[in-house]
Length: 371
Ligand SMILES: Cc1cc2nc3c(=O)[nH]c(=O)nc-3n(C[C@H](O)[C@H](O)[C@H](O)COP(=O)(O)O)c2cc1C
Image (cartoon, helix red, strand yellow):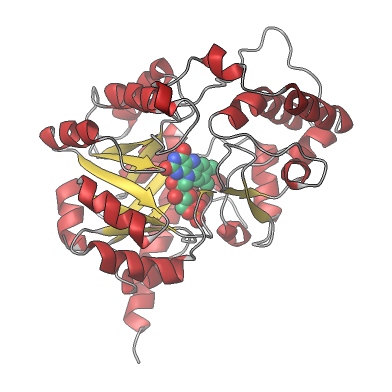
C-alpha cells in the first residue's frame, strides 16, 4: 500500500501517527490532520470507555485509533493469566523494602488516605488487552495498534471484519516478518532511540530493513522523529508515515504534570536510559536517581512483567503527587518514558503547531533533497 493509499484508507491528511495516553493530544492530532492513537494500557476498561467517549465528542468526526499491549511473554500467561492477588504474592519482600528505603531517602511522603490508588495491574496481558479491545470496538476507531507482539489472531480477524486496520510495533526485521505472517496491516518500526519499550537497533538501520522485510505492507517509522527533517528522512528510507510518541509530552495539550514538563524541556539527548525499572522489559525513559537506583549495585534487580509495575505503582503515584506539590526529593525521582529526541524539545507548542511544523519542514526538506 502506498503512502497515499494509506492516507486515503484511513481518511487522514498527513501521515503523522501520534501515540499518546492523553485524550486531548489524541483528539488534537486527529483534528490537525494526523491520526491520534490512545494508549489504553494504563486505563481500566471503565476509564477507557470514558476516554474514548470524550474523544468521540471532541474529534470532530476525524479518525483515531487505540493502542493495546498484549505481550508475547509475561508472568502468568501459561496459566491463562493470574489474578492480581496471585501475582502480588510473587513480589518479594526485598523489593518492597528496597522501594520504601529509596522513597525514604528522598523524603517522599505516603499518599493521603482519601486519594484513589493507581491501578497496579496494567493491561499488560491477554485478559487486560482483550478487555481494552472490547471497549475500543464499541467506538468508531480506524486502527488498533499492539505493542510487544502481534495481537492474537481472533482480534486481528474481528478488526478486519469491521474494516479496522491492525498495526503492531516491532524492533527487528524478524519480528516484522512474523507480524506480517500474522495478518497485521501496518508495521511500526520501533528504533533504539524511541521512548517506551524499544529494541536495540537504531531507526536509521532498522527502517529500511523492516521496509524490505514486509513489502508491500506500509511501514510507520517510530523512534527519534520530532521534526519535519526527521520525518523526511524516514520517508526517504521507505516508510509511508511516522509514529511519534515523545514529541507530544511537552505540547500544551499534554497531561504531564508541569514539574515533569520542566524536566523534559531542560533534558538533553544524553539524559535517557533504557531500563527495565518501569515494566520489567527494556523501556527508554528519562534518567533519574530512580532509574539509577534500580540499575545500580544496591538494586535487588527488576521483576518480570507485570510484577515490576505491581511492585512500584504506588511509589510512582507518590513521586508524581509530591513532585507536583514542590517536594524536591520527589521532583528528583520523577520521570517518564521518553526518547532521545527529548534534547530537541525546548519549548511548549500546541499539537496543531507541531503537526504543521513537521509537515512544512518535511516538504521543504524533500524539495531540497538532491545528489
Ligand atoms: C510516555 C510514553 C509512553 C509509551 N507507552 C506506550 C504504550 O503503552 N504502548 C505502545 O505501544 N507504545 C508506547 N510508547 C512508545 C510509542 O508508541 C512510540 O513507539 C515511541 O514513542 C516512538 O518513539 P519517540 O518516543 O522517539 O517518538 C510510549 C512512549 C512514550 C514516550
